[in-house]
Length: 563
Image 1 (cartoon, rainbow, N blue to C red):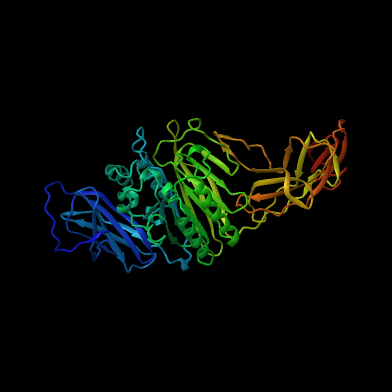
Image 2: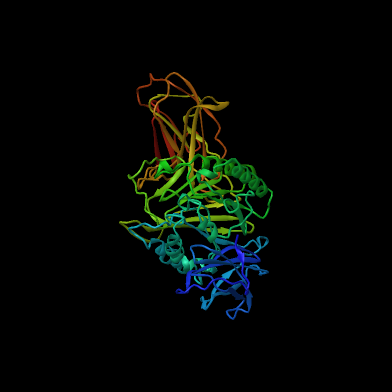
């Protein structure tokens, strides 16, 4: 616990250079309070001055705790503040006075204020690029915000999330002082940040000394897991390290999600934890506990309709995927300074949930809109790798809305009712995608069953997304998502097929009407048997439209007829 200072407290005088070892930074902001922390080379009388103008006018005392003797971290908790208001502050310890900084208090969530947040992780130092985190902070985040939105950084940024591995070794004092805090000072002095523990923190006491996080987790596990609200978003911090992969944490998460489902002021849930469930660039980092967390988030969003994300790190590269049946994103926001996990260096796997993975440094920006049409846009901004330099290059973007109309239900075009086709040359075709919101086609799922009334036991099931960036190649580059090739089916058999479409905002259409067909391997001659339009209607003579020429061997040609 931090000890309350008074002007009468006596400590032995230590003769050494006196200065700020860690400049002031912000923690745990609310609409009426905020925590200001800093570290000094030794103990001395300390206080914070603050006010609505740079003349300040108010003074608050501090608590302190020894970090690396004789250095002390000081904590001042300002209360009684006004929401959505700019304040100025400076800190004094002994004869040293900081510069004047400023911050904004969050707005009350009833005001439906739109917000922005940065998510980044794994900034532990890359020995070959020891200043990479500085580059992320200054040339990356600060430059991007100022160039794209104007004004001061904290006018356009409300909070920062960090899903672990802030330092290389959590017990190493210099890693905190010289690498994490020294490189992040221009940002953290004006915008509060909220981390969770990674494996490199090793549950060190220094982590807990330097952080002031919400203490609303399970009693006895304070600051290991917690939640924090800002506008219409609930942020949930979790501890995915092995010693804390326990049922108590999952039970707590389940209870918070249930409470959130009843809270009409919260539209989205963003969870952060360190370890992945499915890592494309480093499969040894996979953790089943994160899979349990994902299941709870998926159930939550399906039951109450509020979209969710879980942010993570551990693998040093960016990845973005989405659950197949739920409005849930899974996003690796690394790496913001650590060594890159390059393609080919580790055991790797292309998971169907993931749309993109990249071996680059960077960070994620979230633009969250509240009000009558809540939505958020996630952007991945890259600064490149060891070989190619990028300047805040937009590599990925996705927008998710709370209220998202589903795409139109697709109509099957081929095969049609009781068509007989060659089982070795099978293709499924449906009509074009249409979404009432104007969303683009995100993915398609195709299924074949032996029974039109039962698709629980499937002969074939395929889920394809509009893009799949893996090993720097988009394997889905020419897939229109309106047809699907089947390698082989049994001959002389009865089947039934259906398809559904998904938009890029993660809303699925209804399944198409099941269509029965039969296979016959005796069909060997290719002859034209039917011409249909995009709705599957007979169209032997049509003009100015798309037609499908269907042959007896099961092959289909798509033609655009203009007359």
